[in-house]
Length: 172
Image 1 (cartoon, helix red, strand yellow):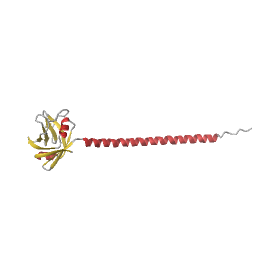
Image 2 (image 1 turned 180 degrees about the vertical axis):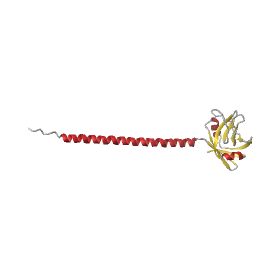
Image 3 (image 1 turned 135 degrees about the vertical axis):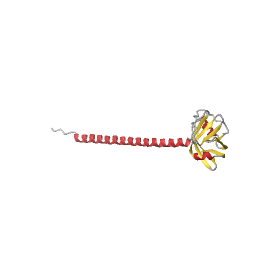
Image 4 (image 1 turned 60 degrees about the horizontal axis):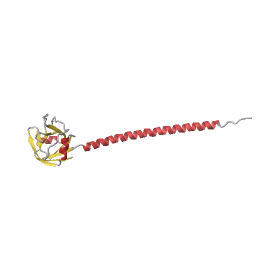
């Protein structure tokens, strides 16, 4: 009596087909995971760009218009700078002081808590707490007791020296 084989060839083919199918599924899942990682990486870069743009938009900037010219300052995060920013808009008189600065007096004195001391250079915007005036430097000065930095010029610094009369200060 002859025994008929139990279709070992078919079983072997089904096992091979199952292994190949499993390999295809594993490779496909791995590729999908890689694509997801790339998408997450790109999203992270986009989120960083968006956060950087939002940070730029949230920086306090002010414009000072005088004699038909505009000067723009970016303020720091000190309390005095924030308080000046909250007093805007202002229409106020500017005065010459010494040979390197223009000054004006904001309506309310500024709190200098958490405000850095100034080492005034061309374009420094500062607050002299002893007199309660805001100082716009158009030449180097250095430091002095009671002189706090509010920010720095980012455009139009060449107009500071010629400011006179009434100026308009606005949030940008």
